[in-house]
Image (cartoon, rainbow, N blue to C red; front, top):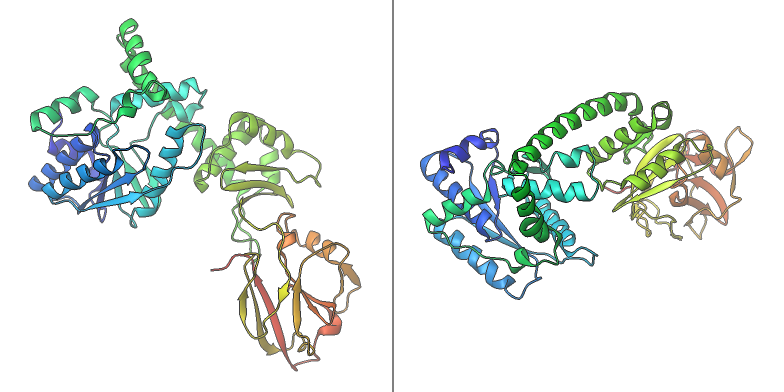
Amino acid sequence: MLIPQGLREQLSSCLSAPAWWLGLSGGLDSMVLLELLVQARQSSDIPPLYAIHIHHGLHPEADAWAMHCQRACDARGVPLTVVRVRVGQSPSIEQAARDARYAAFAEALPEGAELLLAHHADDQLETMLFRMLRGTGIQGLAGMPARRPLGRGWLSRPLLDASRAELADFAVRQGLNWIEDPANRDARFARTALRHELLPALRNSWPQVDQSLRRLAEHADEASGLLDDLAASDLQSAVLPLDDAWLGHWPSLLLAPVLVLSPARQRNLLRFWLRQQGVLMPDQRHLDQWVQQLAACSDAQPQLLLGSHRLYRSSDRLWLVEASWPRQGSAQICQPLACQSLSAGNGTLCIAPSSGGLRAPGAAGWQLAYRQGGERIKLAGRPTRSVKQLLQEARVPAWLRPSVPLLYSGGELVSVAGRWNAEQALVDGNQSGFTVSWKPVSD
């Protein structure tokens, strides 16, 4: 039975949060959770309560739904934030709306706060069936987690043990008003077909299907935990922090410890690591292809697109890099005695006075350019080398090399991002000169 005290006990691990934020759609489920939270607040101490409504703009009544949520919150003394989102183009409007909604939740959630969503037991069963039909893995069979990290805070689902019938009974007894979204009965949507056709048919033929699927979720959750334990153990030998200032920003793994694992453990390790980094999971086919390429010859540079990120193999490591990272820098005039943002978005270049270092440029100043191929530089006490050789020997990954700024004076290459300086451009002894430093990612 749904009671405020039971809800508070369900959320006992979240009582230390600085605030609770309710995701309020205005439908039956979230209106029930709103009422339960307000009643719990009246009878016991809970964190400050807020509500957030995501306005997708996909339905003619979307403005009216937002107003309904505002009136409900005003009547209960709960501050409401309405966030308008733009739903991107996608073959699945359901998935696109969900992605936009969760991105908005993550953006709005304050540090350490708890987002409360009203998913219930029937939602959990629908989620499991939907994932099974799509060929999900073990983790997907475990269903929606009761609690997980989200943005700067956490997401909790305190009603997962309650059925929709229980929620409807509570709403009627409390005299609640709620919105009926027409999409919930639109057969064009996959979840609607599951809810109104497949799940009732399964219950009719297998009356114990709810309990069976819950047991399956429990088994899958246990198996998923064991796989995570194995992945965490495998990960220990592959995670080695880099001291290189150019490379420390990007998560990476040593390739050699990954290659000694079986393909199944490689896939398990990569899924676990990518999930830790909060990036889109690859589908099984692309992940299989990627694992097969890991043992390719050392000069191969395979990559895998994962939504807003790319996974690269380069310089004996696996790198997770933002997909928007510039592949090629842009030539520009260099400003002396300053830190300047590079025009291609490839970080910041700083030039500062120092004892020793590069001599001052001529009247034309310094110019910034990028590799075109064939660049060479003579280092102090060393033979002339190609820039390509220097980058390779320093284990700078191939995806980063086009973004490394080259400093020219009078048409001569005098510095490779401050890391390698030309002998002929250096001042003698302790004379006054300039130091150059490059940060690939600006603060």
